Image (cartoon, rainbow, N blue to C red; front, side, top):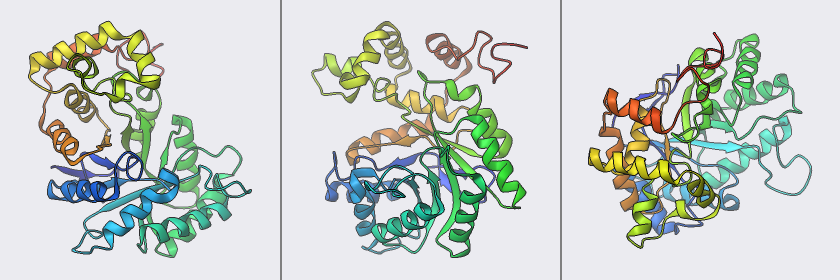
Length: 326
């Protein structure tokens, strides 16, 4: 597994990030521990979680894994998030200084660690001023509780707001943005990805397979296997785009690669992308995903993928406003 710097920071992370949202819900604690052990065996050191996953149980599962010792915590770049409600009372959500302090301390307790490597805002807070947010984050950094800060689900202009406010305080600011980004959802290319590149933020795509639709859903259905991409909202997406997905799976078969790995490899080929988040439910799924980091897509394949999944705007894969103007 190759490692790269996270944005303009000096922090080295694996090219795939281990997402843990299934831990404690779809995946049992013993299996979750096995997945994390396997991730380290393969050189995956970047783990992503959040305080709201499984009502906090996911962080606890990770914390008990760290407690097994043998360098597990030291080898892990640990990212978690705050913002979403953790209770029903006021100040148990969003990004007030009060909630930031309480949420960080609660995550540290559940994770059984003295610091978070990357603390991410799960969403923009439209009611809290950046002066308050950066002051609260600055205290956490001074206390040694957090090393780096990141965002998630921000618009490009939100990234600019955050960075300019940090610059006014002579602070490092954000080092990463976690955004939805995949072949079927390329809106990040208009504003978010260009802003991230401009400010030196690493982009961490979530939902890299668009809820499983890009993971070989049609082939799995033909083979009688269960597929996440064939249920719920993903089923509606599949119904609208079935012909395109059929063509995509044929292309992947011609390449001799799994559709999921081609989708991940495409993301890894995009300038500014640091590490797509994979969310394996089993150690076997993790093993299969690692192939993506070794795939190099040639120019003709990338062009064909652009034909199947056109970028936003009529002028090709360009940032705004070039995508739709001059």
